[in-house]
Image (cartoon, rainbow, N blue to C red; front, side, top):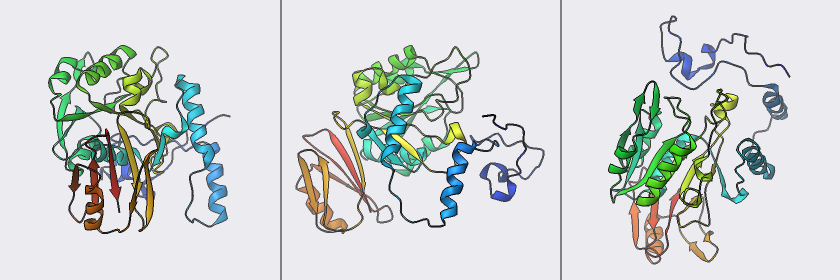
Length: 320
């Protein structure tokens, strides 16, 4: 099929964030990853069919969707993931915030590359976590990691490192050797890596190849969060849909769930269950404190509890 990259589409009347930022009509807004090409018919035709039905009730994630993601990753990179590694969430920005909330306890720190897409910087502040910046080096126009500086930033309170590949906004496609060196440093210091890879389909140079960080070795697989999504590839930024491979059999486990009503039996692992009898914060704290060493409470306007186990290496978060 031939795709149309020539038609000019007027978007200002659609409340486009991209086009409403500047009032000067002579400014071409290239400040955000939002293309002015129409989505392919393979995407828009099913959308039209769904809209024509006219009913937009609650919808479950189709069973085949995760298999489609698994097959696509395998086809494009050779990385063979498991279906139960994937969690579907509404957007990469949400993923960055949840990674900070679940991987870091209050007072712990994430290392964030700089320059970087602004929500990386915002995530730690939004979640009341610490952050130190890891400045990339400009090597003849290519933004590169300073590995020596990176390792110097890893203290006992540093528990996670943000990584973005291909890099936004620098455009660097990090090679396997660079990623391996980064993983080795994180392995040495027992640091989790949250790797944003949503631009990985948009590598245009034949000599460059994307390597999924989590596919490199056992440590990377068991101690990373990979953020993937269709929005950059198919220009779907306004449709919040992302998949996050995470690793349920690792020493570090993230479990995210919504606390909707009382009397829910929540499966935390194959052998560990807690029955929540009340939605009140005080009752939840009382129940959780019988099983976990520390409970982190947040202001009422955040209404959340995080817990870290003293004898089992996992964290979880309750949102309600």
